Length: 141
View 1 (tube, rainbow, N blue to C red):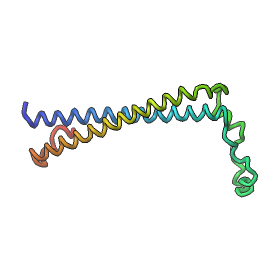
View 2: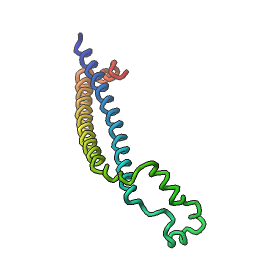
View 3: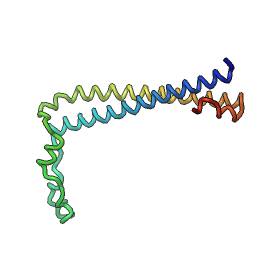
């Protein structure tokens, strides 16, 4: 195996690993968003926000434009569903999940940053050793 072949294989491996880290990061970000949304729903079950359009000053300021605001019961049914009021007891567990996901997300970001640095270093080394033509190798496939 040639030195150029080894460098190209290293680039392919670094790209593959970087892609896996990026995909995992996307999944973790989505899970965190879901957990935070669940947290918000748990809080809202115990302490719902004020109903939109309930303030007379706001209704007066908007006039007819406030006519299509959803009713309180409609909003509550949409977000509460079958959630019991006891949902507030889930807050510590949900916060713990979010904290653990946040730590994992940070580790993924660090690993992705490190791997990206390795990839760039390898590219720079390939260019230094083989010129610009090294960028046309199999690692770009």
